[in-house]
Every structure is written in C-alpha cells, then in structure tokens.
Length: 97
Image 1: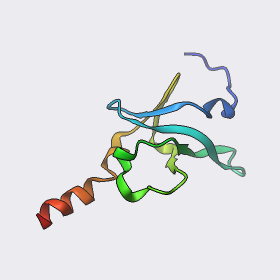
Image 2 (image 1 turned 120 degrees about the horizontal axis):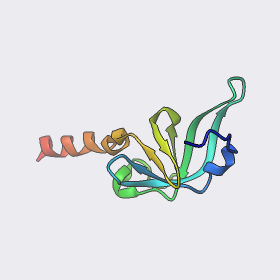
Image 3 (image 1 turned 180 degrees about the horizontal axis):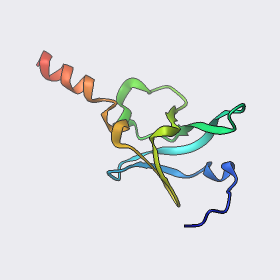
Image 4 (image 1 turned 30 degrees about the vertical axis):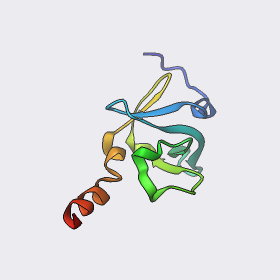
C-alpha cells in the first residue's frame, strides 16, 4: 500500500459506489473540519436518483459522512447504509397497499 500523502482535492471528480457496486454519485466538493484538519464529508452531485428517490429531487446534491467511506482508489466505496435511504418509503407503501 502506498502511504504517500495525497491532495484531498484528488477526491473531487471521483465516482462513488456502495460496497455492493451501486453507483451513488460523483464527488463535487468536500466538507472539512479545519480545526481537526480532517475531511468530514463528501458533497456528491450527479446522483443516482433511483437510489435516493424523491428525497433529493430538485436539490443540488447530498453530503455523505466521511465515516461511511470504506475505500478510496480509482473510485470511492462507501458502506451500503446509503442504499437504505429509501427503504422507509418502500415499507410505508407496503403498509398502505
């Protein structure tokens, strides 16, 4: 593994996928904690609206907490928690139907 420090701006433009290979979006910006000198979130655009449903329609994007990041390489892998974003709606639809 290469331990050479990388510019955090190298994350911008990378595609983000879940552990299960589902496309989430593309990194457009970063949320930083300046005092702690750490990345705290990834601001994503170009979202997979099928994943997020109507919850983000009309928005410019979403911020994914950096703690969800599992691996950074040519793409960024995040925990599959993000895939569960629309489950409550689906469960509610099942109850109503």
